[in-house]
Length: 310
Image (cartoon, rainbow, N blue to C red; front, side, top):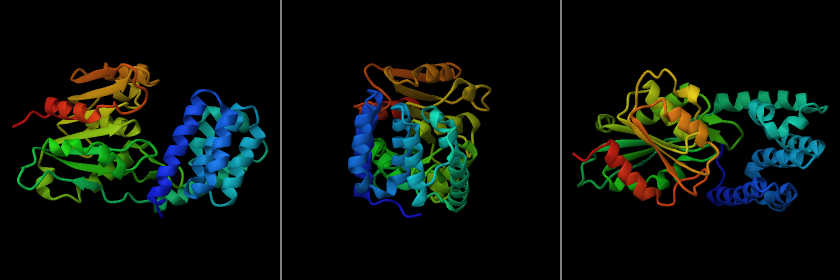
């Protein structure tokens, strides 16, 4: 599957940031105007924008327009994993409309075929300078809709702390361009494949799992289950995790979770982490669902906490 050019991906990121800000402010018509004005500049993301526009139409009281947006995208090859169409609360008014079931059936067929052909791309790997022996291996998992390259850039301060950094990209697609980590077994397989590309000496280093949002959840579940391999510690940023997912772990991980006080995931994250006695929860005032502004400083300190200098 061809990936969108970097400049198109950057335009899409800016567009969605603006649209989601309007969504949070319940300015649905203004958000739709922004999509309509700019969607032609990001054709690779037609499916993603159609879903977002459909949610906005439905919230604005026009479910018929929501269905038309989805059907128009499907007419030019767009698709979504069926759970996006069936589980999104915003689309509830659309589900009873004539034509919705046919759309779901078509999307399911396309999603199944695309997932069968999907492969995780090679990981992004950064190493400390040759004159500095590595003291650990940090494996990071991107957030939903993100990718390995940008995630590697975000977590790059780990290299300055003497760790080999490996950013893994999910093979799990929910649209033609949206990768995330819904299936822990598939996530473990993607991580195992990425580790398999590394020299044996790297795989003998103390291993830390890290991630953001959906990737942070996948990292925590990896730590709890020891799959595909046991790890020394976990660092999770704004994990999208629920208490039932941390019940009865096979392993009790050591780690740090950081999340914003304004993140709507804080209550469930707090309840989930409360089950893990050796994982410290850090809450940042004024931060929403995002990395902290001083993430590089935090990362360096967190790594030294869970993986002391030799």
